[in-house]
Amino acid sequence: INNYEYIQTSIEGRIGMIALNRPDVLNALNRTMVVEILSAMESFDQDESIRVIILSGNGRAFAAGADIEEMSADGPIDFELLNQFKNWDRIASIKKPIIAVVQGFALGGGFELALCCDLIFAADDATFGFPEVNLGVMPGAGGTQRLTKLVGKTKAMEWLFTGKRITANEALQFGIINSIFAKEILIEEALKAGGMIASQAPLSIRFIKEAVLKAVDTPLEEGMHFERKNFYLLFSSEDQKEGMRAFIEKRNPDFKGR
Ligand code: CAA
Image (cartoon, rainbow, N blue to C red; front, side, top):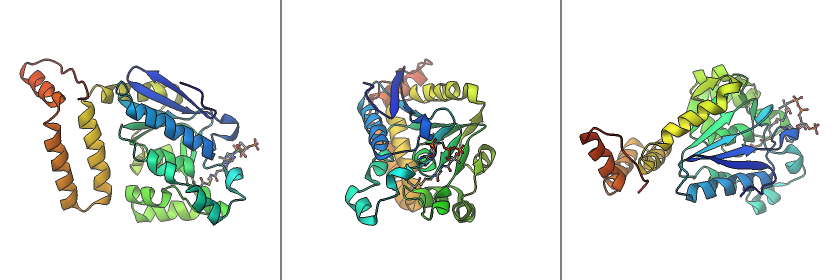
């Protein structure tokens, strides 16, 4: 299945792995690469044997941003006609849980890509930031929105105005990432966490992801209503019967994702 030009995919048990692979330019995200990431994610999303997706970089970077060279000569009409960010929206609407594994630079579009994921595991050398301001532009794939919803206006303004680098420790302190690990064990730890999530009832994970993302954008009452419908819906699944039966019979559940 691996005939991509700028990414590599593999499968580890029930985890679909996507590794960005354009190391000579620090995994700068050109348009073909974004199409490939989306295509790999959508095929894992459709594959019932896959329960979790891990997205990683390599070498010195997760990704140092959108490909500056590719877009430098573009004008607004080019972006409009390309509908430049539609693929990013589709990445953000993948249903299965996605863990971003970040080592080195996660800048601009690279940071935005990580923010589209559900969990972020970082190496101690990870650095995040939005340097677009230094290029005379601004983030376009959700940076001003997702970062602000995550950390609030105060730090978002500071980081977006200055393009300042955010260390892994700061990112942890502000709730941008979940955990920091030494580079050597980072992917192992992500696989461990991914394996744990993969052993849970897939429909529970699916509807939890949907409901949490809903909470980011919705007034409480509407979000509560949404949560309740998902809660009710899970009682039509075989896994709910299996999970509760297993509890009563004092054994481990065997979840099927149905
Ligand atoms: N686009 C295209 N090429 C890039 C790139 C990018 N975003 N980031 C790095 N590269 C290339 C460099 O041009 C260089 O290529 P050559 O070897 O052919 O010269 C190679 O990657 C290695 O980079 P450096 O030599 O610059 O490495 P460094 O260690 O000196 O610096 C860095 C590392 C600080 C990350 C620096 O590369 C850098 O500032 N990169 C750009 C970061 C940036 O501005 N990102 C935002 C892009 S705009 C965006 O993402 C918009 C959006 O919202 C979608």
